[in-house]
Image (cartoon, rainbow over all chains, first blue to last red; front, side):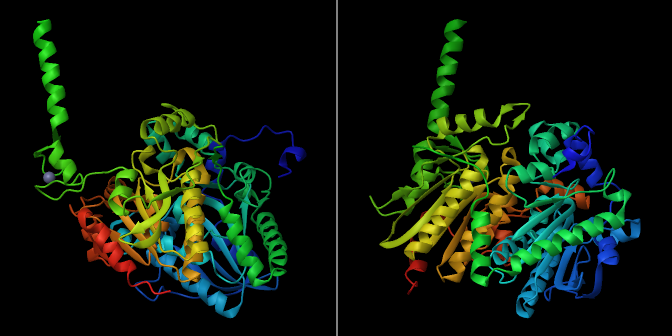
Length: 277
Length: 275
Ligand SMILES: [Zn+2]
């Protein structure tokens, strides 16, 4: 948020930020797990079909605070990415996430979701098992989960696949992360009839953290060090931790009724439209 | 020469006025017969599209429909421009062409005597895309159902989220589902009717979380597009993939109902509501 004041560097273009958000060295959930998370008790499976490795979750401690941590699990090496499907979850992943959120509710433990996905997996088996239903169910259920939810966009916030674990009371976003209704390439190939216009689409879509803050979608920007999060893992992990803990303290002060009501009001207020007369 | 071309255009025009070509079986049907059959092919039962107000007329008892929240229309808050011009020009044209102010018409009325609140999407309006105004109307209608303890029925027909509103359109998925969640909490029935096509962000939000999910024959219901999936898996998909029949088979919808039977089907279900 204060980047402009600190430096005189020209602002990055939306497309440059897209590239940073997808940088091969950009820290992924696993890096945050080893840097700021203690006592991660991972749970597996959706109880219906499989254990989706593109989405992981379990109890965890962040700075002494016990939480349910759930997130998209990208990889860095080829074999990791094959196993984790590049962080593109199937219905099984979204159903596992929901199961763990319900578990958090039962234990009265706040939920932290980490968003980093190109999108929900667009495949035959995903459609067959109800990708749309799985995401829709999460959006509906998350609206009334009776513990605080904090969502952090650490890299790519790819459309419904991101939102499927993103209905937080507070949405935090790294300064070079993106969050969009469609990938710039996908948008360009539809509205510009050619994917090479992706930089124009990226600009038009308003997908950067400062765009999202301006439009009232996110609550806070977590500033990345230097040229981006990939240049200093420790610094960004510490900043993310601080921001999560600070926002949890705010949410913990609310009663369950206040929490659910303010979440409803937050999402009711999303979007801009004209009212005639 | 002039005389000849003039008569052929006149002929063509009248032919187009008289006949409708079915998109499925390609047979030519008299327009009057097609319309009398509610835009459904008498040959192959293909369900063609109808407007939101045509749907409302089919559904509600005479003079019982009261339109609500029709003062909401889109806003170009991102100043979105693509190769074909501005979003503002596009929705202004859509308003002019369709006579409705958003991609959904909302209101209340009686279905064979049973009160219900409805939202009926209109595919003619920017492909039925889900924008902020669309989401707002769907949410306000849900809230109206909540406040008045009335069953809520949404007819979806949509290509998905409205890209020209960027992230704000994505957030309409969470916004509309928040409305559904409140209905669930209060045990107010919510029936989703998925009309051809219901895809992308609409299928992945309110359209797929009905207490009942109903559809019409042959409707396309999908999260990801067929081409994207074929590229991902590198093979051709079966013909019936992502049809309402396919979803029924896989357990995601409750029933496929012919358009002419929809009103009676819904009122029969509503007759079981006992709160
Ligand atoms: Zn036909």
